[in-house]
Amino acid sequence: MRQLSELEGVALGIIHKRGPCTAYSLRMELRASPSSLWRASAGAIYPLLVRLESEGFVTSTGDTADRRGRKLLSITSLGRRVLK
Image (cartoon, rainbow, N blue to C red; front, side, top):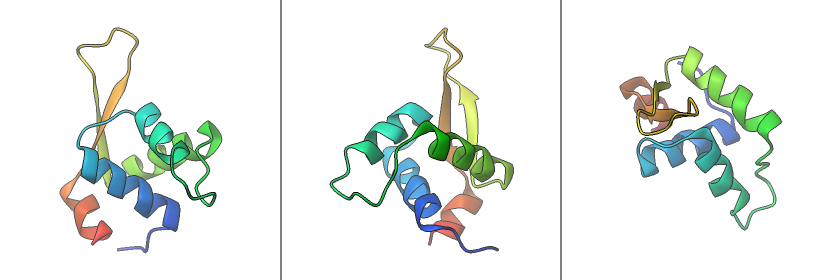
């Protein structure tokens, strides 16, 4: 199991804490952080989430309450193990 980057760990931690959430809500939480170390740009967050999903750390499902095609992200058991 590979070691997470700091931003990957923060993203997984937020998804774990919040439960199913959207990429946008994850970006907004990072943006609201008092730390200037976390970049909340779409160019950083969206590729990171694709990578986390391709490695099996998160899953995404369509939000049935939303017609825009929004996806809800959830941490997997593998994601919880690597987060620890």
